[in-house]
Image (cartoon, rainbow, N blue to C red; front, side):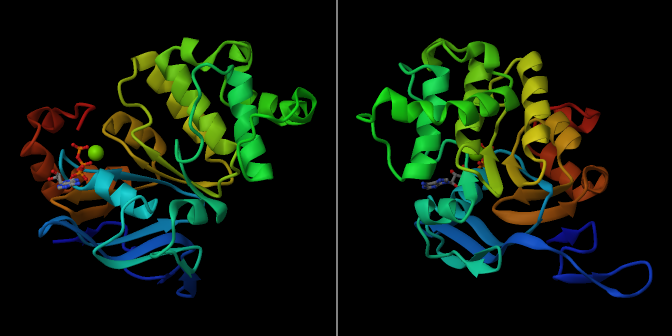
Length: 280
Ligand SMILES: Nc1ncnc2c1ncn2[C@@H]1O[C@H](COP(=O)(O)OP(=O)(O)OP(=O)(O)O)[C@@H](O)[C@H]1O
Ligand SMILES: [Mg+2]
């Protein structure tokens, strides 16, 4: 069963306080999105609507279908059925690189981090890729230097200025995720998809990544899969809850977390949630 907690996820238009139609600006939407693995529906008839400019969280207990859904949205998996629309365009049959060119970019999609290159060189290569079309290791140092200013700006955005000359392999874990975000930002995304950006992090790193996601979300749309409910509460404007491949609820954190069906779904897998604990 599906609950629309915020009341405006059922269609493209709603009414405002004066009764006039208000168009909800949806940047990414799916209809009937389904992925079956040998007959088992990991994602089933999902209707998702992500508002332009929002930070949208995709949550749910283990095995709910979050990663599968994420892989469908980023075109890493073809759907069994259903439609995905991005910015008014049907992208269901497109390849990851094609949707990335349209501005729908997944972290670590194209921007692999090379451990033996410096932090600065990694961002510079991502910029070169964005502007030149391909990695070209044979380019002269002088040609690559033209990207330095922008690369340093991006490093500043993610708090890595002091790490620019270290090799990426030397970075602590949390900082590596920040570098991955910087190389993703080099691709100039309109919409950014992040799969568990805080997974495996210490509290301090989690706080830093939350602040970073907030900062990079300015002027963009972000969709993130996240296990840590405190992160979801702090970041997300809208949350979609999946269980057993289906949308169980959608709305803001307050309404979703009060929803008895959501509570039951989490209780079924992790009783600590009942006490308001952080991890799903
Ligand atoms: N390639 C695959 N082949 C067969 N079954 C799969 C495949 N990928 C996922 N599944 C199944 O689909 C269901 C959803 O998996 P998925 O990884 O999308 O869940 P999730 O919500 O990301 O879980 P988690 O919180 O544990 O990361 C699970 O039952 C999983 O075993
Ligand atoms: Mg997963």
